[in-house]
Length: 438
Ligand code: XUL
Ligand code: CO
Image 1 (cartoon, rainbow, N blue to C red):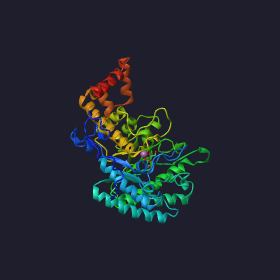
Image 2: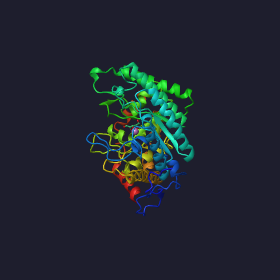
Image 3: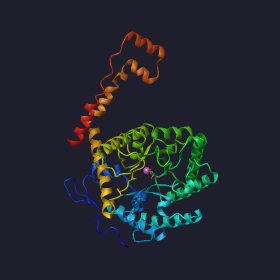
Image 4: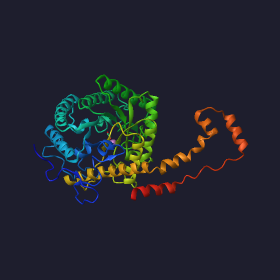
């Protein structure tokens, strides 16, 4: 078997003092934190599209990286070379999962029958590799945004024929996901949105998206898919407005259309920040609704208004992420690095540096989040902040055993309430720094 990354060793944990660029400084898979190993807390996944397909092309220039892996692009030989390279890459890093779109794993043919045949062939090959290495599939999805036929969306398209093509792709992507034992199936609404309301029937489109999702759930359950379906919210890009704007919007949609028992959220950091939220915010909203499923682990750039899909570097962000994940009792899914190297970082070494950075940044976040929880000052403060609801009138409000008149009488007797306690934001932020830096 050809070795694609022969210059790169297997990446091991060497601790924070090492200067070896090909070693983990913080990600120690066997280290136990709050009763579970780091590896159990952090089921990392490789995104097929960024790591094995994307080679740096942007709106202003062509590829900088060579992702041919020794084969001619657009051929099945190339598709197989990507499988070989991808499994070698994951094994060298100790990554146990991958995520894919249908068209990441095979070149799309003009005729969908031929694409489906190729998908059967490549998934046999991937399955062999999975059995040989123990690497698993985190989730699969269908790319229903690149092909020109999806210019107006997939479920939200104005064309009934295109809707059928979307259905066909979802069906096949579900078949392959089930064949590979995927834990989840993702709907990222790539072009499920609009450019202008002047030509758009929003209600009609949303009903059709829900219809496609119901059809997917019915089919998936029929063929034995027991995992979670996910919506991956994103507010804009490629469309000016995307329907799955953020977690709150997507959860409302799922409940309205009766999809909430089968779906959870796949929260991507850079999508949350594009929606004007923090990453932590969308995680919290998902968690309190019982819908925190999986994470697309990346980060954006606060100076840019688009999806930069950078590898996670900001330890404050990963700490607050892991704080939410620990409080929620973990994920049913995992941490998929939906992230790409910067265009000038075009070498094989850079691919490894990126994952080492991402894995170490999440490991640090996990360590610090656990310390924050064990420190207890923040939890203690929050409990104290709402303590008045433990009093007589507060308890009545919480249990719903009161009336507006009773509360009004209570207020009128008081005349004026005491000011609510201080929010102490600066004090709490200094606790975070204290825990972060010791
Ligand atoms: C796009 C994005 C997608 C989804 C899967 O912003 O995040 O790659 O994760 O379709
Ligand atoms: Co994503």
